[in-house]
Length: 456
Image 1: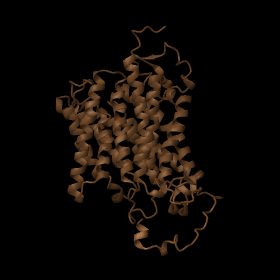
Image 2: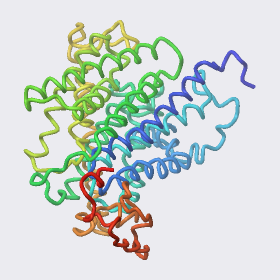
Image 3: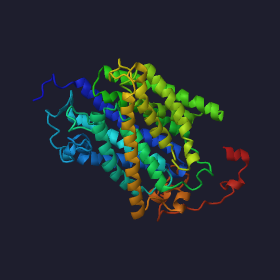
Image 4: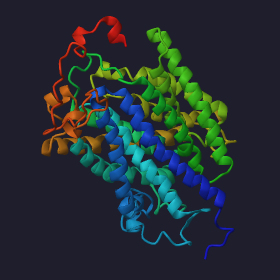
């Protein structure tokens, strides 16, 4: 039996709360953020990608994903966990199944939310043009052959290096809450996927503005709140480490908004609401790997740099000609890379991580470790995702038809519209009833109304 001293109710409550916060980041946070940034004709499809990521990854995580990520390293190589070790989470309901001061299933739940949002992030790059069925299959394959192994590399810490991941235990690169495992990983995958998928019709020729900026702002705010579970929850306890991660998250995000808006004002002449919302995300991404290893001043520096660099990086898609619809590459891959590398410069030995970066007299050693970890994940994710996308494109096709793309995926794929302007209701798919014809009378025909009557 587990004694009360072994189980911390406070730690357990914080981790379970954090798991809920991270789940909120995907649904509704990311769904609203991405949904508002798309055009009105595909907003439901965009939001469905987040919902479907939650569905398929949640099932796979229970079946074998947790075991592949946190099971003992297969063959002792540090590449992937044994998928059979905790197949179906068997044996983890016992009171003796503990991870530190919390039940193992609390940790399993927390990490499930990480896996879900890692997949959902990629969807923003393919807005308006990817088949929904192809997205589902891509999500299943990608999370299995890319995310689960990479998360094992980065998150599976173990004193015995033959059991845990090679980046965490052999290279000893720091990634507190997923700068490499989630953001660089998803960003590199997004780049590979859009290179295979191709550009939207009219890309760089027609305006493709967000259709609902209030939704973007709401989604960004929900992501900000949920991210405290992401970062402070990674302390796996209600303790000083969680408090450090919490304040660093506030500091970096605030500075990133300033960095983004200043660059936007200098470059374009305007500080926009979309820029503020995007700056929030850039700062959150940048501090994620470093939340336990820098001081609050270091967090301000990371946020300011990530906000400005991400604001610049989102324009690279026009220069290089790849269509990353909602800037997953420019924000997540770039800010994740910058935040991960800046640990090598700004890591404070007084922080919970206890590591000294170059500016604190630690030399270049930690920067080298951070570089190996970051670029190994980036290259692996890009190459494997490119192969997955090519195979799926050759076998089932990744892209909707030109007509479906022009008219909108919502009506063709989901038989629905986000904004039903039909006063008679009804579905929009095949076989839907046509609306009844309007009855033309002198009092109801629009053309017969005076301007004053129309206003009423």
